[in-house]
Length: 273
Image (cartoon, rainbow, N blue to C red; front, side, top):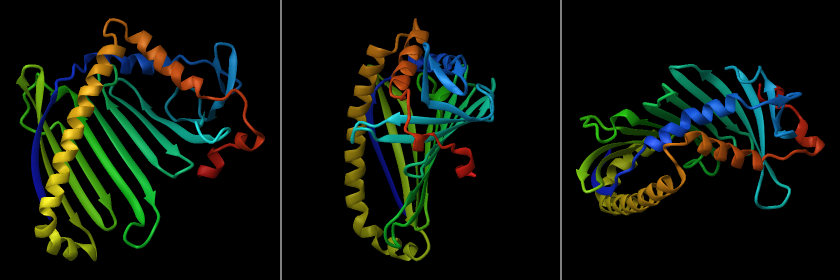
């Protein structure tokens, strides 16, 4: 088993504007009107977003979401969106990307004032015996425990699983003053099955390489957090989360086509099983 630790400092992020937008966006989604099963976007019926089963906006409803791709022209991406839970304690949505086979689950605890978010992704991998198989990534972020809170347990936990490998990572975030956060990361990784002894033997030789790559990744993380902080300050107005939610939903609907080729109108519920 490979075990590594590393630290970095990043810009402190005021998550309050972002967290205020989440419940506003959920409320805006619930209020979307549908005409004969498809969304009514200001009087324009868009066939790219339609109810496949259930009744909008109740839990148990499935939606066919088709988005226009950038390249090549005329290409569509199709996603089955399933609303599994929507109550004061939990909001749970599942996305099935039909083109690539990926499945993404997103859960919010107390969606009116989110205190944690759980993202679970499963993706199929092709290739040879070494890479073939499903890759699963499960990440949980304890939003309520971010600074200025002072928890002892990591706020971020990540677990990765593959038929021939497994790993996990924990991230503990603490305020350091001067508008900065310190992030301590602990990484564990190992092989599974026939690769377990091979990984164990090579750990002493690859430790330095992996440690260098982990350090580079944390440097990129610090730059990304600074960019995210600037974006949040520029785009998320804490005084008007409804306006931001409207803009986010507007961007989504702008990518949904009004009319689809006949072949794209085939229902997904029967094929999904």
